[in-house]
Length: 426
Ligand SMILES: Cc1ncc(C[n+]2csc(CCOP(=O)(O)OP(=O)(O)O)c2C)c(N)n1
Image (tube, rainbow, N blue to C red; front, side, top):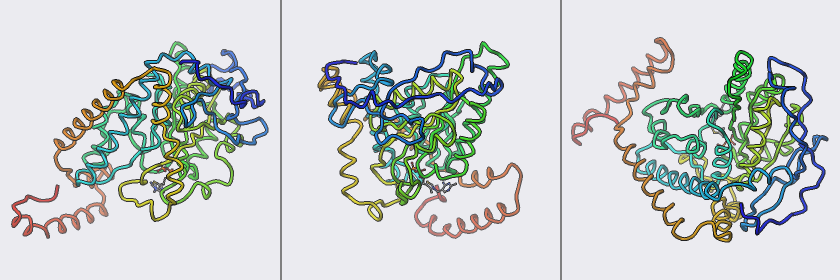
């Protein structure tokens, strides 16, 4: 990364420490503890202090004007980045934004049952996803389209779920990207269980490649008991898991202030794990912080909690109307912090990208959107009976009763369908 605009904001040298939790010598939960060099103590405004008082500021390496800042702990993770990688961050963020627009259009045209937009959160997702290695494993919620892209998924596969074709849409083992989880926070338990499995695999075979897990969830999900249980378990067993919370300020219509009386990052201290607050709209900072956390976890030092401060620019889903509960001024403020705009400003100022690059990214995005549309329309209609058949492994009287009701209801449209020359519901 170019150093021309490096400016020390004075935030480094604040004395805040990155302190790995004391090792309990639990060799089953943490087979590598003791064999690895300790993570060096760093200095960063965004890192939880030992006192448990969370940082006021978040780690930021690239501000909303495209200017860069130095951070003693995290800057080294991006200082030597190849410009191609930084351009790749932009390309991925723009790709997922274009994909999102197309999926929203498909929903509005009746081709998807609903859609969950991610606009505004691209940096949090592309930054954290890009920090992962192939052997690492991501446990997403239902909005991690950007992470899906970094894991190598064909984004069209995501839409199968939202069209009702399937309960999944991809084989998680192919990309180490778990299926979307709509039950809030349930995936954090799955993630910790998987991470504990990684630890045990290492005990069984020390030549296994060390890996870590990233558990994604939102500020609303942080109020669920599952997150608490996950963190207690992960801390107790030094599980190699990074808890990545995208605090997008809203849980549908409930504002963040209702979820927590303190910054979420403060909670990490209660579990005895390091907590880092990062500017979630700064792709470089998210990338650096997540790399640090993954190294920490992979090297046997246990879990890390990251709070990525970001904003859900659009609606919660296409079934939601944020004008009913949100002030326009807040939306306008966050638009000035747009993750793509700031990286574009930086790339242009550093002469790392020109008009031709941005034009190419736009054209490639349009091509991807056309591909996604083509694949989705070719899927045909969803067979809703499949849903009834997959609630339980065996037949269930209540499901059978509901299916009978549904079939009656469907049959009531038979006359209309005949008149219109159509053949049943899609
Ligand atoms: C256990 C559970 N309770 C309630 C819901 C309904 N629900 C779906 S999304 C949502 C808000 C989630 O907010 P947050 O965790 O902040 O994530 P975001 O959607 O903002 O990314 C709620 C309450 C659910 N899916 N699962």
